[in-house]
Image (cartoon, rainbow, N blue to C red; front, side, top):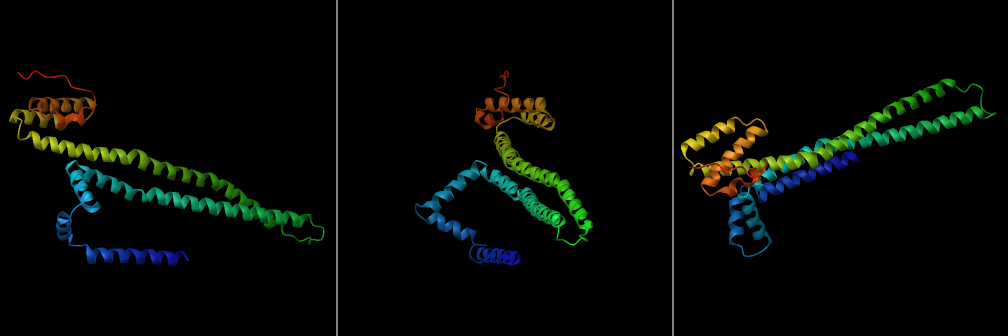
Length: 237
């Protein structure tokens, strides 16, 4: 049954890939032209929205978010294997317990044959001991898998997206400021950028960016970099 489901999933993936290759692949320009010529509608609004997202750096953030979603397959697989081991362990434990009870009942039965093998009972107790020993290992495996999943979703993913946004905003600032700042200012900014290793050096770098941005009235380009409050104004004279 599971093998049939596996084959059906592969078949569905192949059909989806074939549909995309036949109808959409290498036709992006034609589709975009058709959307532009269309009137109002959900598709047109969605198309305009993705353009706005591209301008605001949402594309790089979305790429980072999608990559993190793909990486979630590892903790999900770990959790799936852990639950499979847990339920298999529970089933095996119940089976061993039932057999032990039957053996005990058989020993207590006066009509039972006197040659009831005691070795069977000993092996059953050994198996039960091994199952008890493996239980905390399986639980630890499950806990680690869940912690990994929550770390990926609630800690790693947001900060990966923040980093991509910072990268977009830094590139935007540096691109704009190249046409405004003097060569000396750009050289000093490059030197400070190369020295960024910790919070103190990062603060000096951001303060210099803010000083240059304030001088050319583009302070809004560095608003998201002011992680330690407003920098002190420098004497521009």
